[in-house]
Image (cartoon, rainbow, N blue to C red; front, side, top):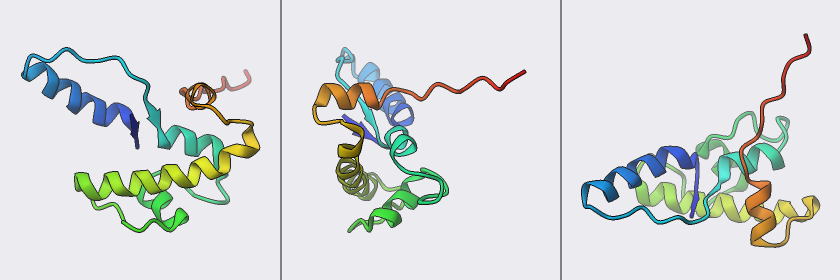
Length: 110
């Protein structure tokens, strides 16, 4: 699954699955916001909101907080991010899943 800010969307999907007595399947999740934070600099984009990323990559559909348009914009953003990943030696799904894991916050020096 590919999603922008995946934990937010997953919470709704998990709730709906539970409400309908479906077991939640385990599957890999790629979060475009996390990948963007690793691939793009602050000079390129001031933040990693879907609208900002969509504008940066020139997506065909702009996000508007409606599921279909946001999903389409996320696909286009993901494609833009994939083009950037070659410089990070990411060429397989396994490498992408490892690359896209949460960013650990650095401890500030004391």
